Amino acid sequence: MNLTEEIKAGLNIALNEATLLGVEVSPHRRIAGATLSVLTLPEAGPSPDDSRRQFLFQPVGRIAASLRLGHWDDPKATVIPFTIEELLERVKSFGGLPIYGWKFFDLYVTDLPRWADRLSLDWRGGDNGLCHSISLFQWRADRHLALCIWFDNLTIRDPLGHELALEEVVAGGRRWWDAFYAQDPRTTGRGMYPLK
Image 1 (spheres, rainbow, N blue to C red):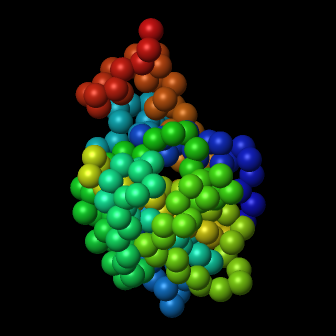
Image 2: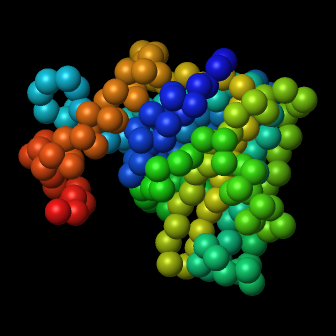
Image 3: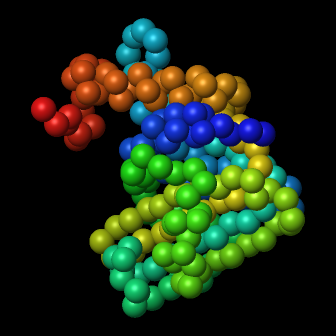
């Protein structure tokens, strides 16, 4: 799959401030799934009642994670090891927090070196599945989880399991952020306010 720079840039926008609900892995099938509640708007009408999206990554070549007790930039924070089977439980323990920063894809060259010496998990799936990566995180005052998943192909599904075109996901995210900056009332009630 060719994740073009344009599609990656659009998906970065679509994922900004999305709530990370869970990450599961099927090691023997080399599939990972991340469920996020995204900020999206249709071409017309209100924001959807259920904006969950399942991001399916396959084949997965590597998953690295660092769960640390402390602030994200504390080099002395205690590292908590866990297994690939415990990943969903660890992600869910944060209670569904937003991810932010406008960039999530193919950041391992700059992102991973900051915590590669403090790994809780480093699962390898094979020689392929390494074309792209997604970097996710969860952060509370007392602990931080950094996660990187390497993969070749990406599929996105809606809450009913229907596959969505990547361009459709990108367009929905762009519409939401454009509406937010235009102070569209459909984007209110989330505790965020555009700078004037």
